Length: 400
Image (cartoon, rainbow, N blue to C red; front, side):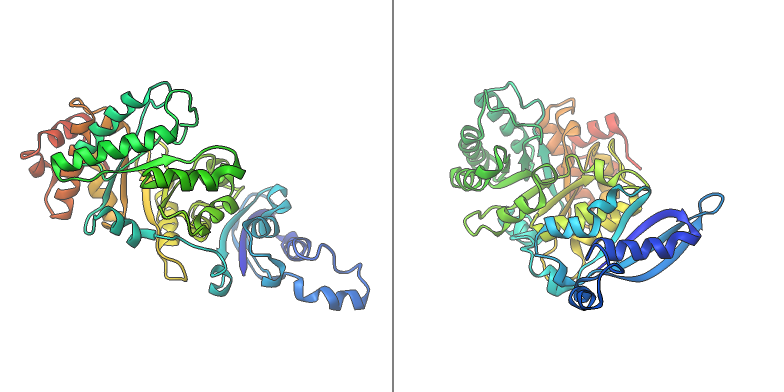
């Protein structure tokens, strides 16, 4: 496999630095070993694949990409070994950023990948030919089950396909997940009987790591339709175990909490398309939430598109549904579909709950916008037949 690092260094030092990475991250040392030992460890040693100078970075310094090839024999098939070897101590070595990670299919196949992926999520929700609408619970903590159930019903009645917990919903004093799940399942059943629309609930999977698998199974048995999981704080190998477990038969919805500490700096960390794209797909995420390029917590548009490509590109694993998030409102739906096509999730919180008509009208506004875009209709024309959409466009505008 080949990892590419973007470094800022003196042009004269690039060769030495590249060789130091290749050897230091695989066998640790080379020249100090006797010949017999060199032969023994040679198969595990990295090698410099290429060095490409990109631009000047000031007197005597350049920005360059260094690509290092790592033998598959170096890895144990865990994310812990992968990340420690390709970017462990190296991540602390000054201005250096992991910008590309090319994994051969035979190595990637050792990871579970999505159990459901885009196709499986669509089958479970019954939504085949349009973006899915996902609504986010807001103000979760401190509310009891009855209050949250009414909150769920309001979102479901407006046409939300998925309704997820806020990722910060860890407190269980008023409404533990074992109580929320059956209550929301009953509310979803009632809304379906009343409207013909079925909403699905993604419950936040929390608790000590050693108990997550059993809790995931218990919540699925109680009626959870999906599991929201903070994969970066908990760890990619934990996500992998959840995805591999044959008894956990619900999709995994992955939140990017804390990932900005890894991808956001221009000269440090790793690119978002690796962390929130390729690695989360390998680990088994079915839906990937990531910062949209258009809202309040933004990711550069080009980097966002690279991330989506990592979720979808041909390979041994199913494609993942992208869910751009943070600051999404109905006027942005045309831009989302233009960039991503219909195979995506429109994920909204404030623009649903902040709608002047309430959460039901907020969800209905999004559904009208989605229907209009899929039909090739301008939102202004669609708003003439949808008061919720008209109100939303008046409040938030048409987007970018």
